[in-house]
Amino acid sequence: MADIPEFDLEEVIYFLNPFIENHAEGSKERRAFALAQIALLYIRDRVKRDEFDKYYRACFAIPFTVGVSHEFATREEADQWLASGNAKDSERVKIAGKGFMVVDVSGRLRFMIAPLPEELETDEWKDDSE
Image 1 (cartoon, one colour):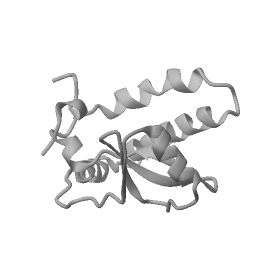
Image 2: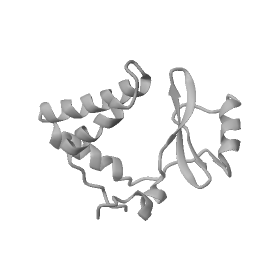
Image 3: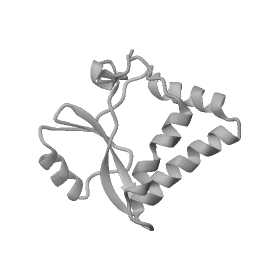
Image 4: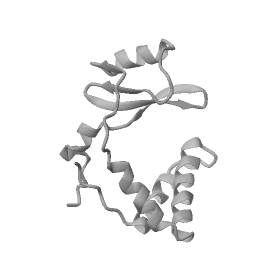
């Protein structure tokens, strides 16, 4: 199983500042980064850190297999399939050997990076600070 990357909550909260500041007021990106920062502040301020740590670790503990409904050699092939209307929200696919999940974003299906268990066992997902 992959090593679970450690993190410093205060550092992550601070790290989001330039991402917030580099996007225009009112932009979706700025709101998304600000929301992420607020969520982390909530965890910190409500003393929910232990619960979050447990949840965070559970996200990396994958004792089951993940069903992949389709495999595509290229992103272009996957995008064509997504546009065909046959995809379903939460469906897992593999594109050029990497895991993705179909997600509904404001009524539109998109791909979200969602590593498969075998990908998490590689060095690619390990924390570089080790």
